[in-house]
Image 1 (cartoon, one colour):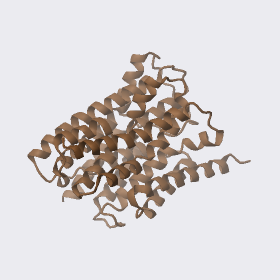
Image 2: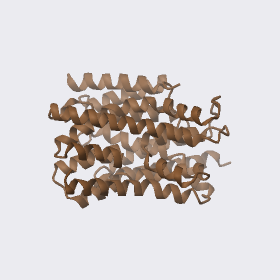
Image 3: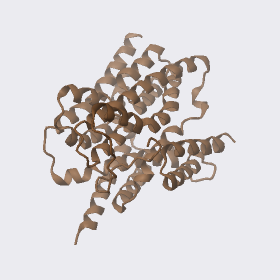
Amino acid sequence: MSRWEILLVAGMTAVTFGVRYPVLALVSRMELPRPVVDALRFIPPAVLAAIIAPALFMPAGTLDLSPGNAYLIAGVAAALIAWRTRNLLLTIALGMAVWLWRALL
Amino acid sequence: MASKAIELAAPEQDHKTTSVPATRAAEFRAGVRATFPLVVGAIPFGIIFGAVAVNSGLSAAAAQAMSLFVFAGSAQFIGAGLVAGGAGLAVIIVTTFVVNLRHALYSVSLAPHMKHLPQRWLLPLGFWLTDESFVVVIDRYAQQDRSPFKHWFFFGSAVFMYLNWQLCTFIGIRAGQAIPDPQSWGLEFALPVTFIGMLVPALRSRPVLLSALVAGAAALLLHGLPNQLGLMAAALLGVGAGVLASRRESAP
């Protein structure tokens, strides 16, 4: 590893750990107000949706609602499978299959 | 049970209290089992990271070190992309920080459940916090049983994710050295599809559904913001929408 790479990995490690750990350590010593606790349960679905939507609707950086958008087609298929079966492994397997079929053909 | 969908963000729902015997080992194993589908989803992601990293100009040692010490998939990907684009140290590190800001939201969510833990637990579990472990662990904490060892569930989930990530990075590095142009392997859908499988089964109450819809729509509208700041803003808007909707529902 070059010196530049060591600095890169060290810097990325510091900021990543600096986001994850201090909040955990500090907040776990405080009593959070009730409204904050109520809001926390919306964090997982909101973060996941905010990651998923651009990946499906704008895979190349701009909005693409065409049937040629393999991400969108496979994403809708995966959502239907997840909704019907509630089975994560099956959703990943079939969703990937639909995506590969649409993207490669 | 590993094949069952994960129920996230719904502590008010009637969780079938699993009759897991509350021992450390049983919690650890349950954490591994619950994380299994997510590990499967992370496999192609980790392999592609390793391959992309060595093709972006990083040495194999630096690519593996990133997985060992940074341990944050999307930040590592973006970091490798920036290296390939010739970005400077400061830009890459600041971008990593912003991309990982969502982990602060996870930490805030988890912290109330981890009050009783000493630093020797908080340090490693904080280091090992990922999207995947967060989702299964917050679900475990939301279950009503009084197991005192739920942090062992977190430990099992985190160790499994971590070891898998190291192995997949290693495989990807070797594959990337053998076969160039990993971007064309076409596995970029693995991450979104995993997250879809995590999100959709949780959309069972109107406030949660609204929260996800607002966050998704806002993420599209704010996509132009630099460094994925749009993701963060969209997530906060989604949380706000969920809170407002649940207030309305509970109002007389």
